[in-house]
Length: 53
Image (cartoon, rainbow, N blue to C red; front, side):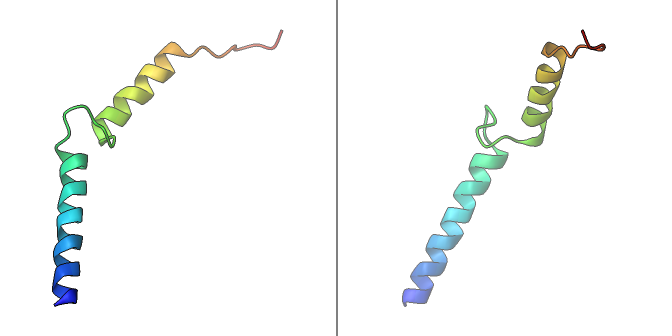
């Protein structure tokens, strides 16, 4: 009985993590598109000097 309860809890936790990751509106856990957009924003707003002073 304890193993069955533990299995149900693990399955429920897995479904919650999947729901938060895949179906999140604002990319809370950072889906691939959100991470790509953030990386592009950072690289577009960061300047690197091309020559040493």
